[in-house]
Image (cartoon, rainbow, N blue to C red; front, side):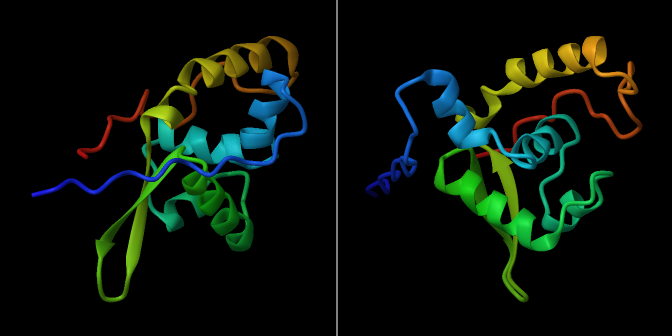
Length: 133
């Protein structure tokens, strides 16, 4: 049985060849890293789970960010229910590679942003386990 070829993630239009600018083109808006945070550290996978985050992302923004993350190869959408159709989202290896970046952002925020938490919040799951492929 032949395996289906994986399609390459869509290449976004980059502002420049600078790696920092390129990374920001992928994940540098106000919501994308928070969605990735929820996937990585809180084990959230379903649309409603993301809506429960304290930042209160709106449904239209969340839909757009999940679609963008999927198009760029950072998350994979999986159907878990047919009727009505329901999907869940899991990080790809490329998305999981952001773990050290988020850890460093946490450290930086704790050191330099007054009022940020010094300890993990309730519901923190460490690094969420990888779901089966």
